[in-house]
Length: 444
Image 1 (cartoon, one colour):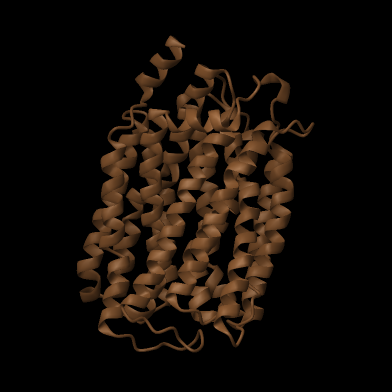
Image 2: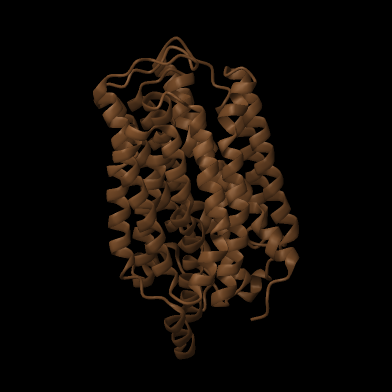
């Protein structure tokens, strides 16, 4: 297949700037916002995140089913992205404008309901957006190239997410400050999504074979061996990364007593990841995408383990340098899974004659969100069980007990490392490489 034209290549890719901005922002600061700004306990904050993510996951199959079967003259995916992005903008502002009620249970209920609505808005954008990618090209290497460009924009979304807490702090670290932050971040999500809507042309809906029933389609996906050996490692890796995202700010604030290093560390991690994209793209042309993914995440896990043992001794500068270097491996988490899943979908499409990207991405995102939900609850429970004390105000620093500090350290080291190792083991059984892909297409 010929190369994608630049308008399609960049118009599609920029959409993930807003998508990853949302994903990273929630992972970095949402539990922190609930405990530090709204005064919820760790368990309440983790439960709010878990409930929101579960509701989000449950709506994925519904949105995917409607998206796959849509007959709009504007395409199957773009109308969902257009209206979902507008709703996402509004709900971002509402969610980060929640006041701290005198009764913490009321705060918990309001925060949970708004977070559920926020996650639904994201689903309306993310499922149709992700489902667009396999339609754009069927070439094995071109899919990796498209993913590399897409993830470059995603990296910039992550960078913007890192600025969320300092932006809120700049405007006063109160409800007013958080609202202004949410307005700007939500606006970026809206604009980047709408650029994709008006840049990418979808194929005529009538060009596709009629869909199977929903239950039959999900059965086919869950019995697809290629898909399962990509799906399970993805869920484990996402869970590990979400635990790290949600815990690192506590780590720098309470263990290093230097919260500002949190942003420096993330910038280092992100920039190293960005500048090693092309390295992994070249490597993936020589070895399989799954091998690249395994090597990268193993290196990332090793860095976390070294940090767990040595960072308390050598301090925040050492942590920042080490985690930044780990971006060499973490880079694969941006590129490889998002170029692996289109290969699975393309082979399924050739075998069945049906384009059902929405079904596969619904399951893909469902398991991702279940992993995020579990990670949020795990963080909250660990904080509470080890004796973490929420501060009275965001600017205050409570002297935490040794057990609470050990709990925070454990969340940033052994727990995500165990999850990553499990994911690497399962990923070894993923069968698709360049030769397998070519031979499968020839047999079909």
